[in-house]
Length: 362
Image 1 (tube, rainbow, N blue to C red):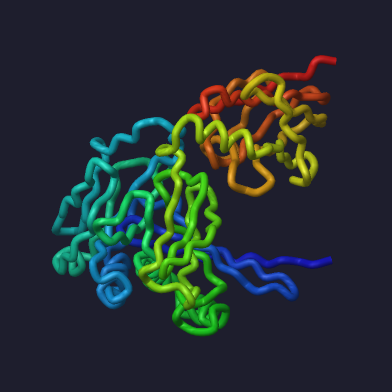
Image 2 (image 1 turned 30 degrees about the vertical axis):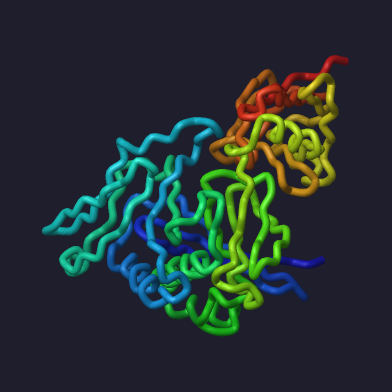
């Protein structure tokens, strides 16, 4: 029987932005590290975040015209909700100095260089509960369309995040990951996946480089860009067809061509129960469940479409009628009476999918 070992690496990225990495190793498999946005970023040392600014300056050749910003997003937002940032404040707070960091209406901000804040050993402080707001570092070249990301920007973004990660961890952990990545240049290793968070999720994506266009796979709101692929130039562009920009006809066509299955922990996340259309844009799946709490998520076989909730592992009871979130977190059904349960998916309004859970009629 194969066994796995997981090593958790806690680290931060630019300006109250952070990353956490997990290394999974199995026999005859290549170790891989995934770096994503972190969850607990209400207080971070400015001296640690200084490494992000240094890395951005050092690797500017990857994206000479780009700018570095931090970006917030609401963790529990349901698609279609307007995110407001007028109540969010950010500041560098030390023993003797307090420097406000303006937050723009789109939830982005620029971390300043302040020698005074550095000398004062300041922290970056956010006035929001750490469980409600997510953060990411973002490098973008001005002038690109909102649905386009430049690969050189994403490579520079990786350098920023990894620089702070190295600052956060100890010497022994750095040495270990240098071994995993076959050197100190982590962003050039094929064994690392660094997530860039998209403000929307794509129905399709493609990479365009030197006039050649090829399909590209994204992961919901997360973009794992091929930053280590040396065959692609820094000027390669990843183009997205975002959900929010698609027509209603396109959304309905996309949903109709992606068969959905109910995936649950009750059968160890195997094939799942298929949703079958009962009437136009309304679907149902029935599963037999024992007493207990069962995790579930709705997914298409090709991975392009998924429905979940927020926050992660939200517990619901039979009789629930809830709004779903595209590419949201897994949910938990608390079953008191064993038997057959019907999951009814309503896609009549593609922007606001809903799920009802009832005991199935005998």
